[in-house]
Image (cartoon, rainbow, N blue to C red; front, top):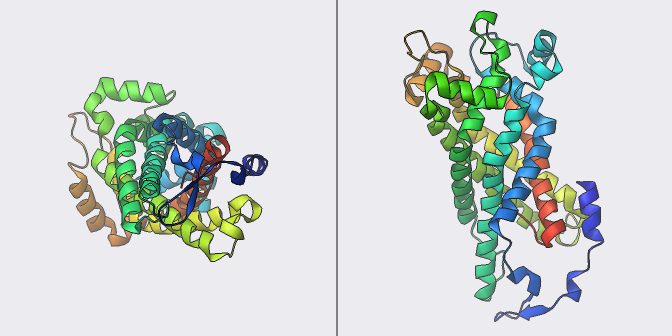
Length: 339
């Protein structure tokens, strides 16, 4: 991130580009009037997500194993230690990393890419109407996050299911383990034994969670970033240290809000996607509401926030790295912000 940011500082200053006057007296850099293709933004989103997933995947494995039923752990550190002792680094803490990378191309790319594209289109509309390009209501940013998160999540549900299965497999008793070789093997086995529609098992809680998560992550990050940029606390337009401190604060705050809102859906999603199916094909839970009721009845309402700490510990660096990378990659290639 520092390398990309330093390269941006070497780019030509915008003052050397043509300026276009607006009806309100403000001027806009001519390059800002052009639209970045959606496909290009999807690639930026996927690459940023892969960079974050490489660092954060062990935390995702710990989160999944703490949220699903079976072996119980005292805390995040206890879970990480026992998983490593039981299965090692590659087959334990990095189990399912191939699914995590696939997930970034199927989910992360659309989530970040679509949001950045919608945000830019709104900014271009504002410029064409002679308004400040960043004059965008917070509610509209949240709606953009909902839209991008929902679309990306539905497309990426099969990779999400594979990620949960691969992450939780080592927790099961040896006789019940599915022993998937990799993400492709997992998807093929699920399709053969359970049907292709079961690749979207748990799609409802997955999409609901992603809708709320993306709305909070992306919308809140954009809103806070805008306020901090105007505050002067981080230099002119938040430019101190290549804008990294401002992005850090923006994404850290959005991570906490997003995790609080999304954790209940995360617990239900993880349980539905990893639930066992008996010899007669009967699943433990019949629906999302059935899973919710049974979980709360047997373990109390706080079960919905089980795994909050590892989820936040994972979500915070993931959000910070992925959104900062997406923003800086976009800036390096196009000269424009992503968020």
